[in-house]
Image (cartoon, rainbow, N blue to C red; front, side, top):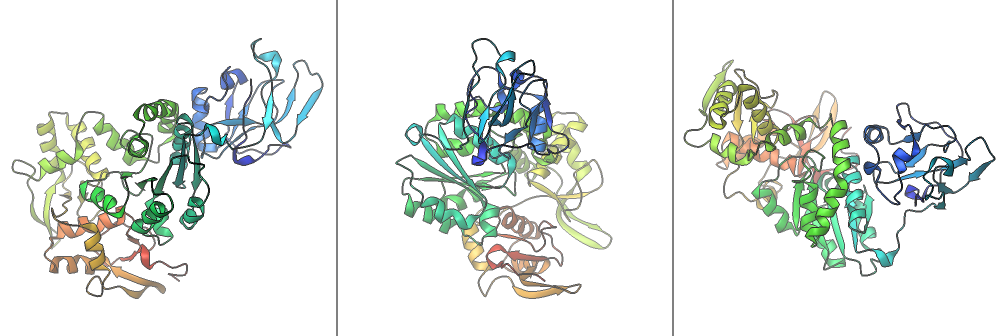
Length: 478
């Protein structure tokens, strides 16, 4: 048996401290079994959950490899064992420096042999059929995409600094097909424009395919898809996560890789990771809530459309504490409508309403409350039918658009920002409703075109400061 690599070309040598709470496999054969090159997720269950959280795993068996296994920090999908291997019964130890080694022969089946290989993360270029450049710093995305890339017999070049894109594109591909996947928040943080990034890819690799990952949102609708295509991308998907793999990661691969059978193989390869990541994905509540509704066969965008049509929820202007909230419905009435329209129990209707909110299809009028069976005001998000993202973005950034100024609050200065309530008023002057203005403002944030200056708020009709990513600078605030 051979374990064939150490990740990031980092050899594991001397003993070192490991984080508290590492995953433990009671027997090495539970982890390694007898097949070469299988992924970590195919060998372990509970331990993988610890791996996803702690990024380290350790064997616990007398006479086994004493040093912990090196795991590639969740930007890959395999394991390496480093350091000392010991023969069963306390015989002479042998150090394997700058290499990786397997378990001792005494505890393995008779037809398995112990071996080692040099530390490397490179593959034979002649055996590759695909190269993926992935701009991302999300651990789950990196782990899942690495597993898929291996199943596709490809290589994954992941990076987190968008300014490295040109250098990455300049590396030879040896005639291997190239696909590029770009995380929008990371691209925006480097003040990069989507159209420019896609154009650079096409210029340097005319046949390359480009995908966008809108990791700040869980739903991509038609307007956003049209914007991505107009910018030169082949596909745009929302945040990649274990709960909604088919609608995110699998859809991305299907659009970028022409071999449908290979994509299905990759999905089967990643299935163990999906189960483990779902177990440890407690921080991704929104994706889990959406997936719960989708598992019932509910088309959330279609349901939101029904809610605002004739026979839908009662949408009206309402007041609370002398303030008028236009175009909203009462959450408890929405629960009743969902209960009757879908013929589901009331608790289930509440969960479906929360899924609509998580997907950005409905929202609390001040974006401060979660959908529940209470007297709370919500709106169905509404984007104008003929609204074009790129044209609108160009307009609001022009001298005739939003008022972008240097501003201050509580002694802190914020350069080149605009006020949320002023932006809503400007859009109303252009003929948009309050609901449309708030929905458009949030869409700018979802697509990483703008953001709250300290990333603490969604788009609100309040005196909060927002900034276009294109106006960011290393010393924007003080």
